[in-house]
Length: 387
Ligand SMILES: *Cc1c(COP(=O)(O)O)cnc(C)c1O
Image 1 (tube, protein in one colour):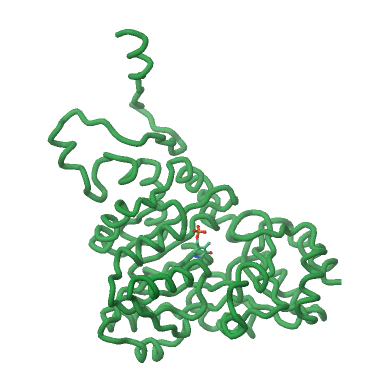
Image 2 (cartoon, rainbow, N blue to C red; image 1 turned 30 degrees about the horizontal axis):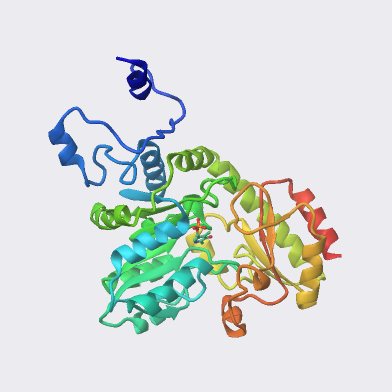
């Protein structure tokens, strides 16, 4: 062969007799077959041989199998973002005329997407509290298809009563979908509590280092997975193999990180609750939180996100945000650095006063996504910003 051809058809060594410690990045858009019949047969089969990168890839499948295993699911679909996973599931399962029941406090992107489904696709929605199976039963219509919940809601940490809500959904023949981003499978495994589908923004705790955007949907059974998988390859919300690799690499320290996130959040929540400049602390590990009893039933620990209300409202919150130094002013959560944001002016700015009140956010509310730094350094920073 001439150099022009040899540079194109580079040799690809295959590893035999040993396997790599770390999952390699299969940075390829497609896969080569010896046998034309096998090529034809494998096209479009979930879990089959690798054919084309939008369908599957070994690095991406390693992530899917890892998260499916942690959640106790049959199979998963990794996506390019958390919203990609949410869209695959909702668009893949709902059709015009269907009715959806969702909990009141929802991640902003999800709330916006549901509004779109309602205004553009003729889907209807009812909102119920996350811990009220009677309200769920009362909201059901003959067109109801699906129930949508979040294990721990943003930013004030309502915890969904998953055993009660998922079993009500099951009795009514509805598919239950749970966004488990804030809890991770280490604090809660919704499939074991009766959910059919679990969603994650892998961007957050699963990848854990604020360096990748990703998502995943995990399914209790193969059939539902197959249905959504066929839609997902049409939608094309596929992750890049490098993003999947970063996520896998981050996940190896998930247990260590979650332990520290939760311990740090407890330390800060306790100190904040005793501080005179703070009028309320929202973290389900505190006994006076509205979800404390549910959280003790559903969660192994209470998570690393907390919110608190500064006495003095917006002006005091503005001055706190301007004074904080170690905690970084940034959106998102789940990385090793502590992040702080003022929901009323950032993540929740599109909501009107009534909607804000329903999510539990006031003008003085500050959200902390607690990192893994030393808790005394975090408290020193918060204390100086409060004063
Ligand atoms: C961030 C987030 C999402 C959206 O995920 P992206 O990766 O940003 O697309 C969905 N649900 C929750 C609870 C989130 O925190």
